[in-house]
Amino acid sequence: MSARYAGLMKAKHLLLLALAAGAAGPAFAQADGQCIVAGRISDGAWAPRMAGVQLLGANGQAISRSSRDALSSVKTARLAQPTLLSECNGDKPLAQADNEPRRGKTAVPAVSRGTVDVESVSFLKLRTGGELVELRVRVPGERIVSMTR
Image (tube, rainbow, N blue to C red):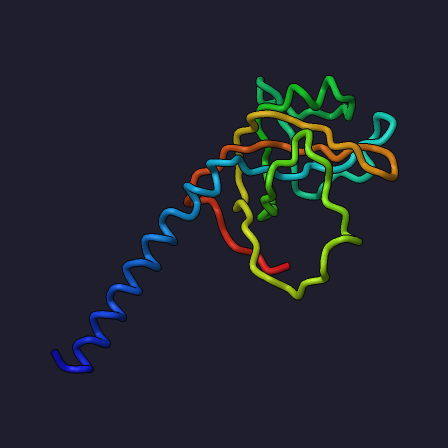
């Protein structure tokens, strides 16, 4: 076997591994659940609401109130622009930025614009008051894109 042939075979195997990992990536990402942040509420008011995220109830009408009861009835979210996906925190404490090293801009997963199904809504307490409104969403793999932030 020539060195050139061995090099081509190695490149072919690496390409197949990369394609398999890329195809499996979104499926693995959904196994633990993906979330988006709809905004922050404090004393029953948005402070602020994420631009481009519209919350919809079971009947498809926009939810305009910012009470916990109203927000708990969210069934879908309409995204006007790509929105960052994050790990779902649920009841876990939020990471504190002062404890994490500063990173440069990197590619991060996001969901493309359109409508997504909301599985659940969580309210994450903040140290400075108020709560983040976290939506656990169901996103098909083909809707996951990459953004730089």
